[in-house]
Image (cartoon, rainbow, N blue to C red; front, side, top):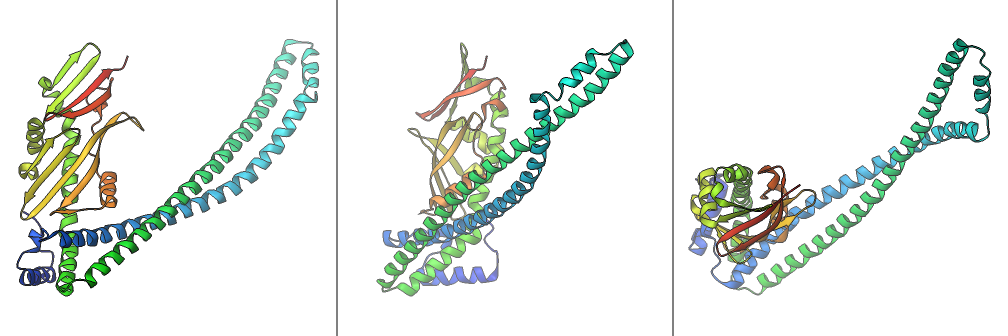
Length: 360
């Protein structure tokens, strides 16, 4: 059952909205297009504000990382300078003939014991020379790597800073739009109460439930390779190609086997898109998206959310991005068979078809 009763205050707020609007917040379908848009914008303000907090934290963390890298570079520069001086002495000894005397001494050995003793001595000298040069090489490579990391982190910091500026501007514009619309309404106080209660409902219940569904989907996708192995009728071999065709009915059956949460949900395969929709206890969630073949960093078929709708309200791109990053809804062919690789993915006629090839 849905966990709505988080606190008496929340229940009281919900009952106030019922009295004012004649409908429950759990049924929070907007009564008209203008109201729906205002509610969507209010949810977008909440979610973009969270994104601003996340990006601000990322910016601070990157700044700290850059500071630490710069301290490491200072220490490495000192170490490199010491090893550079030692390496220079070694190289000068070879290029200026200072090691020629060793060869002369070796050739002057008058017996086997002297020769072996000299060889041992020379081995120690040459081994020390190699160690000095290798230490310099290692420290220099580490210093170069650290400098490159600082450049990359600074570029990332600039990107994050630009994102932060853009999101703040977006937030201000949305809030101004909301304020402008509210000032034109005769029922602004009642509308504000609806916005406040919908916002509370989303933060206390809605977001929790949406994450709950995404988490359940991610867990189910982890079990998909094993399920496919147990259902060989869904696969076909054509030479070196290995094709998997999953009808939407079969996928729905699989999901319901994994979690009873999906008893009220269904996947529908349309023309290139996947639609997921379900409703229970007055909450309705609709997700549309695409499966895309990607090879970075590994060969995978990943799900990208195109639209996410909660009780008729479209959520912003920041929410979709955050959920994609937190929950992996992808399919990894190598978890099915280690020596195959995805070649393409297609959705049509109520079926998801994945073409794979054997890696020789």
